[in-house]
Length: 406
Ligand code: FEO
Image (cartoon, rainbow, N blue to C red):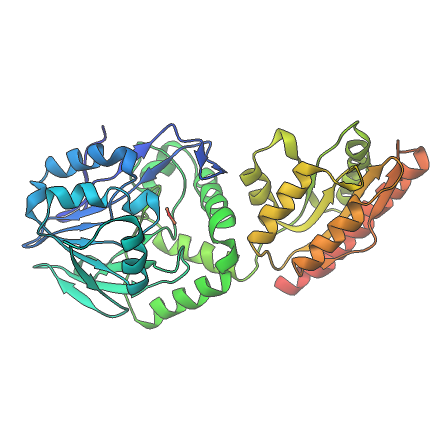
């Protein structure tokens, strides 16, 4: 059990730490995660979000240490995904008089999860407010960050933005705040967790993120703390995580090539080596990922941290290799932009994987450097030279393309 933590006067983190989760709906979470929710002990006791159902009793025990749940007057549901709302029915058993504040899309979704016929539900939209005593909560709809129902809650007098999934990280830790985390780990580790989360969950919504952050800035909200629903709370550097999000949404990334491949009898792997050397000899950094040796979410993150993508695949039964198809399927769903791509691979007789990959790049509307490079059976010394030159040429194009973002 983790004790409640006061994050602002009379506002408490009452969430849970999930140290053990490694598969978060298919997304590998090597560092676990937290399900954060917050309790405001004001004249009218208010709970912001719940926790994942498996941890309902732990979350309720955290609340009970501060107040009897039947004293909760208001429950704000910022997001209906299971990791945040699935303990709501249990909460409503203990606080049947509570009124729920939720967006209209949230209400419709909530009715698909629970029998809400006896619940007091109040639909809110951007700008609506709830006065709890000394605090005023202002609601801001943030559709598609992360689901259509999503919203954030700003606690005016505390200058606190409860941001739900946005600005979160899948990071189980004893640290509740960014400065506590970086005191014993590092900024780099925390920022990597932010990028990992953004790449795997929020990549498709960059344009929306930009406009939503602008809208929040235009509202003139003073923010001195951001409390997301996963990971550490931004107490010391809320501006830094906003800046990171804006940079990622604007397509900023590293002058680097992610070489992401799989291999059957090592021919595609052997091809990757001179390709990487060629890229390095052009002065461009490289990250090499073998798909069956790497969690998919790591491959996606490394793609996102790189301006260029080279995908390598052998041809199997005239098709692309299955693990490579799995990677591109994930990537296509994340609607990547602002990256340049190419492909390479080996084949025995018919070929087809490299052509298939270029079709995928076209489907994703990624700029692609064609025609890539293919080798039959085993790379010869001449083939290795071709791969080296391909790597060099690709790196030159990546440098050129990268200038657009500087
Ligand atoms: Fe953490 Fe979209 O749920």
